[in-house]
Length: 81
Image 1: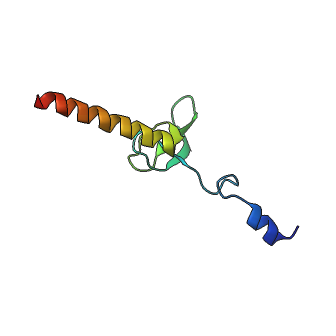
Image 2: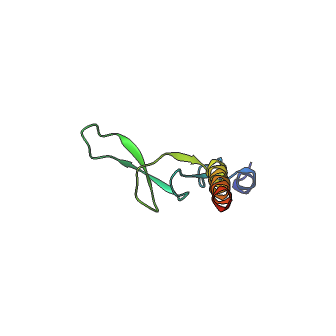
Image 3: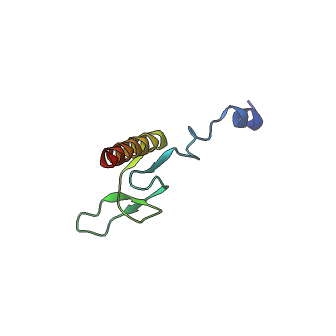
């Protein structure tokens, strides 16, 4: 197979060039870094707010935000009664 054929068959997500993973706090891209504490563990940091957080899929973050919005709207409706 020629390199052009390989290019056509490749998938950027599966090849590791792109990722659907975002931070659980802001939904921004994340970076891995080694923490400077006594345990020297690898951690994930949000590129937007700089907090250490978990890495989740974009669809999970979107669902989390929809649930949060629905809950806030329900609270507001209760307050208006």
